[in-house]
Image 1 (tube, rainbow, N blue to C red):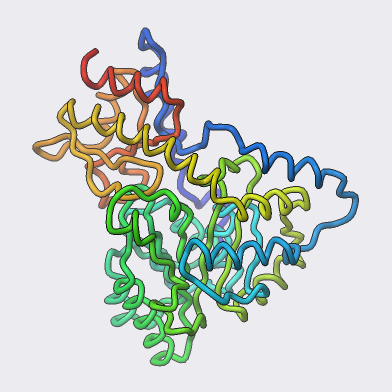
Image 2: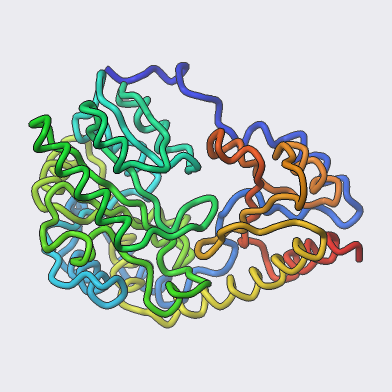
Length: 382
């Protein structure tokens, strides 16, 4: 049985309200770097595809149009090093947060089961386990947890990771897959490994900038066997489609078929015009490259501002954020949030992402160029 809403933790961003109020009192106004919501225009070709498909009187298909699923398959082969994906093993979702929150329940994970997730992580992995009535367990070594526990049913990976931008190598992904399959053989209960890879196109540092971020579905990871593996992906970041709620799952055909049946019964369907827009977006790499360069420019300016002000940026190899802490003795993240709010700069405390993150803050790159420049200037005392 899942949990009642009252048993869930408070929505963390609500606790930022007093610091947002403090930041707004700055003479130059607030620079809000607390939430990674895109601010740049949705590409024209995507908006045109949405408008062209706006006459949609009938129900859309839950499984997604053949054109959309083919576009996902082509994108995986072209951009992620995953050739030959089965179009039947692709399933559009209403944004990726919905998929993360509901996947444990849709897979039948429940009481007595464990869901592993990264120790420093997006809070929805924890929430999704609780909604299903399962036990969320944070860990930085899922392979070791799988070797010592018999109650794990789902493992969440996140690479590139939110909030800190670390990237998992092929060897690390392969070790988790091997451990999950060994645990399944040992217990007779399959273990699903799900990887949230929505920042994979926003990479800044080598070797990943040249070689690409490895996917869980990469043949070097899977050995050609997708059994028990799922990837969730969103177009919110790379294509500025957060308002479209445009995302998808892909991987093990049997798991996708099970999820499809449940979603058909529940009416969990991506609208037809959005499916058309996704198809167009996935087929065009130019707008993604353009957006990546916008974020690269903002990242360079903001990182220089933090470092000039005596802060350290850890990891942050990929994604939409800088993972920041004061240089010197560890300081509680809420103190750092308050210090920065006094400059009119609002960031998110590491406490939102687990106990292991309590010394850091997360600063998003999703503000217009002039506001990022303003934040950097304030950090440097200008």
